[in-house]
Length: 89
Image: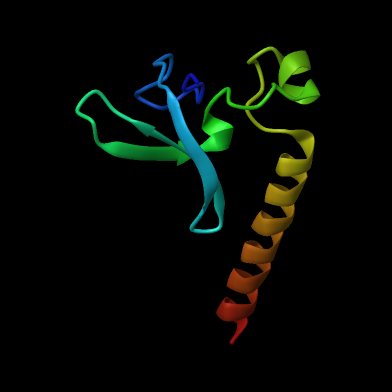
């Protein structure tokens, strides 16, 4: 497996997958580092799965999906509304 997250310091490093499981409510991959310590990363930060269609089409030019951006816009609107209500009180 290879670390593929664009901002991770281990990007491009290859590790031998030891196991994959749900830890802390997240899909994680486990591997041993160069010092023999068991480490884990989010599975989505590696190439352990086949690349999805959006990532293939984006070709590394878009880190956020349209759905993620729409969710972010909703969250920002909620935060702004809370701030406005807090100022009115």
